[in-house]
Amino acid sequence: MQKLYDTKNLLDTHQGDTEFIKHIARLFIQHMPVMLAELKKAFADRDWQNMYFYAHKMKASIDLFAVTGLAETIRAVEQQAKAGVPADNLGQLVADVDRVITECVGQMKEEYEIVTE
Image 1 (cartoon, rainbow, N blue to C red):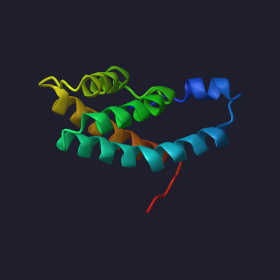
Image 2: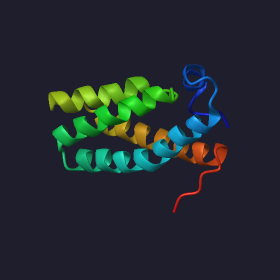
Image 3: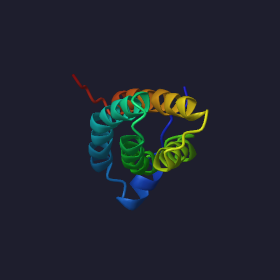
């Protein structure tokens, strides 16, 4: 299975400090599922303000880990929510974010041997 994230930039900017990368991965694992759940709830509630808020927050972490294929997707979600005028594909975009983030969190847990409850 192809890894859905890339830590090369993090390693380059932090002198190869793998403990730091593991710490950042742990934060990703803790916070992204919570933000994802809030994003999905906001979508279901048609709460564009909260949807924009969570998409905007998630964007930084997605960029930090160069999560495959999500940079443009999360920006599209963010822009549609900010405008308050969702396109027909917004549900599919949210589903794509859900699928990739969920898989990414699983891969990170495995790679960094992080156990969560």
